[in-house]
Image 1 (cartoon, rainbow, N blue to C red):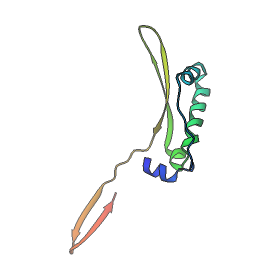
Image 2 (image 1 turned 120 degrees about the horizontal axis):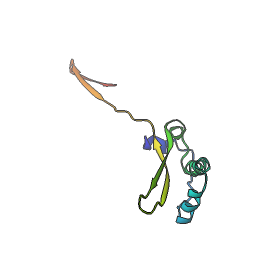
Image 3 (image 1 turned 180 degrees about the vertical axis):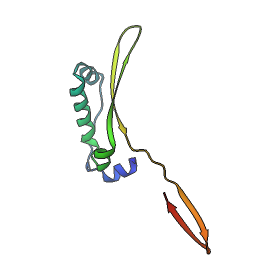
Image 4 (image 1 turned 60 degrees about the vertical axis):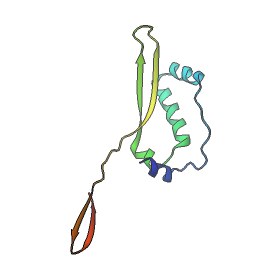
Length: 101
């Protein structure tokens, strides 16, 4: 899927982007909905294809240390399409037929 996404990506020149610890601290102070929208917009600035439109989403992960109670919130992009491709080869009359199911 990543290869198809890259071939269909509408963004030809990707802007440079690096996350700093200051960006992460600011993101953790925002309400979850606003932080999510900001992260998704940042993702879409570099990745915009029909694969992203239909088969990718965002997962919010919140971790809290049980000792010091420090909280870390991560917003991760994920693909929601999983499939397997089976190729069956039949040999009949000295010809090979390939079926994709």
